Image (cartoon, rainbow, N blue to C red; front, side, top):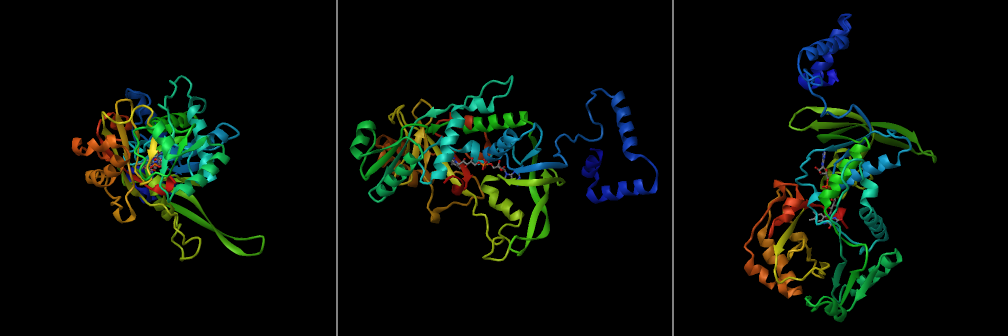
Length: 439
Ligand SMILES: Cc1cc2nc3c(=O)[nH]c(=O)nc-3n(C[C@H](O)[C@H](O)[C@H](O)COP(=O)(O)OP(=O)(O)OC[C@H]3O[C@@H](n4cnc5c(N)ncnc54)[C@H](O)[C@@H]3O)c2cc1C
């Protein structure tokens, strides 16, 4: 501990030299002496737990079996399942490294918190069916003794996907796959749609699919905090820092067919400590890349994508940050409590937010319109020009929005507290998102 403290204070090289010389040239028991000095100082000063030389409680351990890069919902979920599946308590040491505990730019707390079964790939549907069970029984999974139960504010409500003539056949096929996997989804004609949701303008809609069960939305910030609380209680360690480097070793091996291959393995992770130029090395056996929109960069740190083109090593992890806006608006004449999570054929989407005629929604920009993901400023014009026209066309009650709503904005960088964000009426939110992590 002390050596690590000194390493912080004096730098790595100096420490190595300094202690080495002391040890080599004299018979002093340096560690024992320092321990005695610390005990003496502690005995004369108030506050027994106070470390007079350096508080190292924020540092990561020197070793951890698994290091998880990123403490968003995916990182915490991996930590949870690793601990849950371990055979003996404490068998696997897990460290989560997160560089921003306000989560000001992380997708998790700032997403729109929806869960649906309506995907095209069986794997996604299976994941979602499992996830909805997890969410419904959250306190069976994430309860912590003596702590209050979690309330995810789960709002059961179907997703309503609208297809044009062009997309109708694909929708029909998708619903077939969804049903095969056990999801409860129905197809609706425009007439059925009008009967069930009279506030929808069905012009241009050829077919709709509607989730009858296991869909809705919840508070993702609460899920994040619940996972964090739980994994901490299970012995997972956390470190506030940024993973900046991996140290690897290579071994040459022969495959069963006699081919010589080189196996590269990360055995050390460097964690740059918050507000410090110092880094801490953590020896490990496994690294999990759960860095969300930044996963591509983490993969690159590990050398993935850096090899010759056309080889496995030369293949980049296809993840890069994309900037997305989420807008929140108020519309007294808007659709009521039975409003599903609507995804229009244009790509625009919206859902209710709370009970007071507030709605949130947006749409993704085209490839040509992709905004610079380097800053987190809200583009108010995007709502007026690209989102609102689709919303107003599909829900005539939203016609009034453009004239009634002066642009008022909120950049997510300012807070990660989605509860605060959500309570603000007519606010616009924005965040970095890689759509490929959310197919
Ligand atoms: C606008 C929007 C709406 C969305 N809506 C939905 C939805 O309705 N339903 C749904 O299921 N999904 C939705 N998503 C997607 C969902 O939010 C993400 O898939 C999910 O939150 C990703 O979680 P994550 O843990 O991978 O990433 P994140 O939550 O982004 O966490 C990654 C973490 O890694 C940390 N990190 C990065 N690099 C390093 C480093 N070098 N060292 C240490 N830490 C590092 C970051 O600080 C961050 O906290 C939405 C996303 C957006 C942007």
